[in-house]
Length: 422
Image 1 (spheres, rainbow, N blue to C red):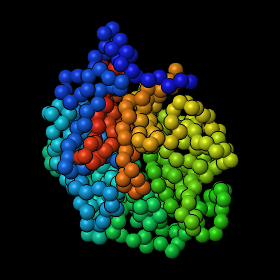
Image 2 (image 1 turned 90 degrees about the vertical axis):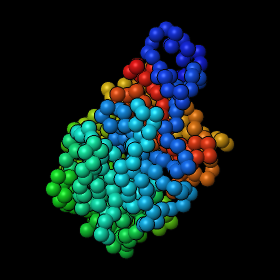
Image 3 (image 1 turned 45 degrees about the horizontal axis):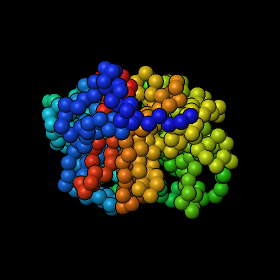
Image 4 (image 1 turned 180 degrees about the horizontal axis):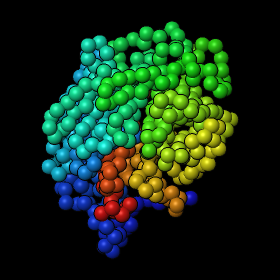
């Protein structure tokens, strides 16, 4: 398949033919160009970003866009580094509205900031208090808030429960994803019984461990098993109906390298399935309650990675999607209706260009949404992945990307004419 570029002729032809109306009313939107209209919705001198791609950044009305604000870049956060929590009002000249703060955060995923599913006014994020990690729930309309005595990672679709890994252990093995300040009490234990995945009741605050690292380390076959490998969990995500969740079971070798298996389970930790067991699995997203789109290798011996659709069963068969067109290293989500896949790339070429893009599943065609350079200083732990997130009405995509001399900022891309939501 050839990539379908969204060039000036395509844009003008669709505009003149009346196929959708592009939102050019805002002065910051570029007029007819190679890519769909884009504007930067946060401003320096402070830096703004959101983090991961599988969280609800937009409120249900698609008007308010969550973000985090920090005064520095290009170093690891310390336990006493505080970031501001806020939202951008897209209907009031992109006004930044400060909402709170957090001292439990990382560059790649922030503080797990997100709109609480099922609510049009509540948000949730991680913080620290009295020597432990906690989560805050705030009603942005009333200003009322409450604290849950546990951090969270993924929230169920009904907003009532969450699952979370041990961020202390993640910080030990993968800085940039965990939070500094509290050392892993099981540092010397390669697969502890008292660390793993926890279920959190967001109404009562009750927390219970549902899957331990000891248990998962003894389940099935560990590819390239050897002495001294250190086990941990990362990247959790509830299914669309809340009946199951995904996590990556990862293990780190003494030389720092790591492999992964994709695991699914029920919210109580039962019915554990090792869906992809070859050791090579990365970004993923649920397509529906029974299918997952994930990046892996066709076989452990394959040189290249791909995007594969799998069923939520043990040792699922891998069906490759968009080979050679859909980027095999980006961050994947389905737009509502599953007609389009939203994805991005890591920096490529001498100019280190990142390219968020849409992929039409039935037609097998790709539409690039823009080219965003990432200077070399943005590498390693404090790199800026674009992590594209879509609005509930499928009108917008928001990404994180450096902007001129203002550091990382939020960029809004109008995709309404492409997907037909204008």
